Image (cartoon, rainbow, N blue to C red):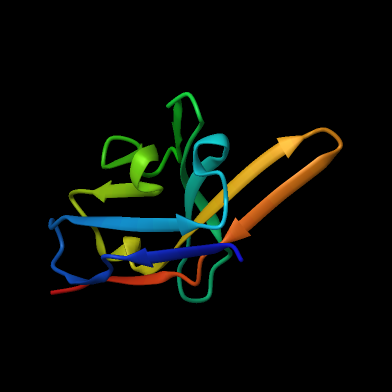
Length: 119
């Protein structure tokens, strides 16, 4: 059974920082591209960041410079460090795992962790 369990969300003041964690089980973690997406109230889900098996990272333009994604393969965990948080960063943040071996694709999502940026 595949599980992605996010943690680290909460209430933070504007300008503050949070580090989200996502612990994976049931998959060969090191073979998956890992990522974070978010969904703000009333908005579509958007990709925040991804990190490949080789450690290459990609960030949404609106967040680049304020977030850092990293992974710890021995711990089967992916992290999202978020700095200089803004109220518009308020959202539920989801961890996901993706693997493509043509013609097959595997994709798993966590349940999400809520981040609220407010004074």
